[in-house]
Length: 322
Image 1 (cartoon, rainbow, N blue to C red):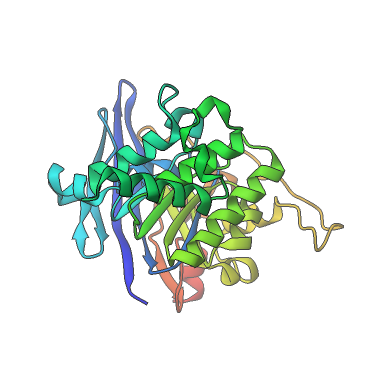
Image 2: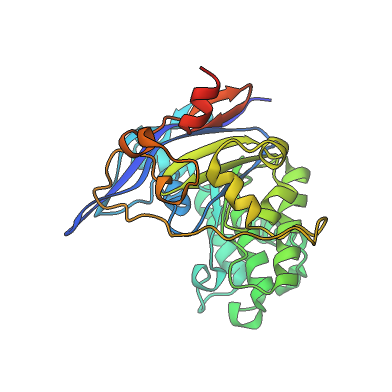
């Protein structure tokens, strides 16, 4: 497999009246062709900021201050506006968090998909209409419904339309940013199953951003766990489930109900994510970590490979592995 996306030491800060918010700092991970990676963590950990940084959608007072985002050999952070225009939709696209906000209420859903195709592909209007019908049918919607307006669809169907739009120009990489938020549990399961089926069928590379650990572990090959703007662990799903290295990863698993072991006690994580304004150089999880020691209060652990393919940022693992 070839590497589709490689992120190296990505940092994105926001300038505020109270100081610099270090929303994302030194994040590093990669995504292979046809692979689905789950990017998880509590709200406020920087998951969506990572996605927006990849897509170059960070606006003032935010700024990507360092790092590389390599998509199929091209550094998106150095790309010109014209290059970005040609890469978005065709090479990389996004399924937004809220289809309600992503769809224009005064245009039919078909017109909105057709517009994206015509702007980025050299095809005729009739070909774009035909492709739109095929895309809607691919996500489980009658192709004739392309003449309908967004308000004529349920929440789940709107989300399916948003998925169809993301696939309009056959991208190699799709970022799904909390795309099931606000949907009922049954519809969530249907949408996630649809994304997984399309990923396999089209050999897509997918970054699935979520705080839903059970859902992510069920469908993703790899998992990257973020805490307070930092990547604290990155490995295969099997490794994360069976051999988590970081105390935060272990805490997330302990705080998640397990249907295969319903008698296991669910333990909540005490405290909350720290304020990221002018945060001192330390382990950001130390105030909630039962294993913290003096070094954790004075230094920030770097992400390192502790076993083949398994990366974590924890001094405990560093001490164990020399």
